[in-house]
Amino acid sequence: MKYTTEQQQEIAQYAIDHERDFKATGAKYDISYQQVAAWVRKYDPENQATQTPKKKETKKATTKKAAAKKTASKKASKKLQQKTPVEEVEKSKSTTNNGENDSEQTSTLDILSRRDPVLEKQLEDVKRRLGLIK
Image (cartoon, rainbow, N blue to C red; front, top):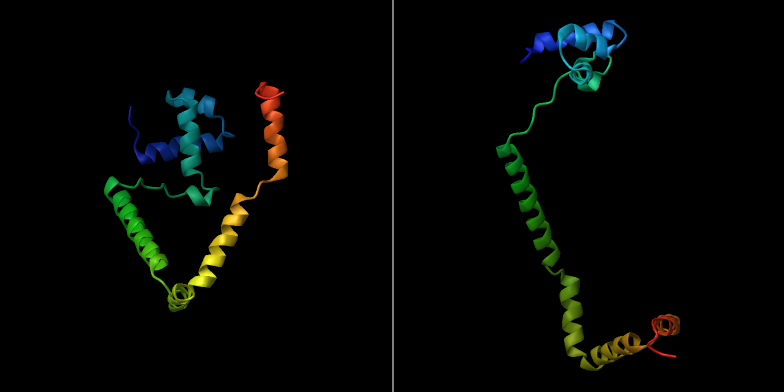
C-alpha cells in the first residue's frame, strides 16, 4: 500500500512521540518496523540535514555531469600536453648538444643495467627453495 507524504510524516511523528518504538508503531499501522525507521530518519525534526527529502538525480542530469567532467578532463590533459617555452628551449639545447645528450643516456643505461645485490640474494634464495639450484 502506498502512503502519502502526510501519512508518512504522521506515522514518523507517532513513532517519535512514543519513544521511537518502531515495532509497536509498525504493528499499529500494519507496516514493517524498517519502514517506520526509514520514515523517522527521513522526517525527524531533530535531524536538520534530512528534514527535506533528497530527490534522486535523473539519468539525463547524471549524463550531463559526466559529459561536463569528461570535457574538463580533456581540457586539463590538453593543457598538460602543451609545452611551455622553458621546455621548448631545453629541447632545442638538447638537440644541439648531442654530446651532452649521449652522456645523459649512457649514464641512465649504466644505472639501469646495475644489479642490486640484495635482490640477487633474494632471487638466489627463492631458486634454492624451489630446487632450481643447489
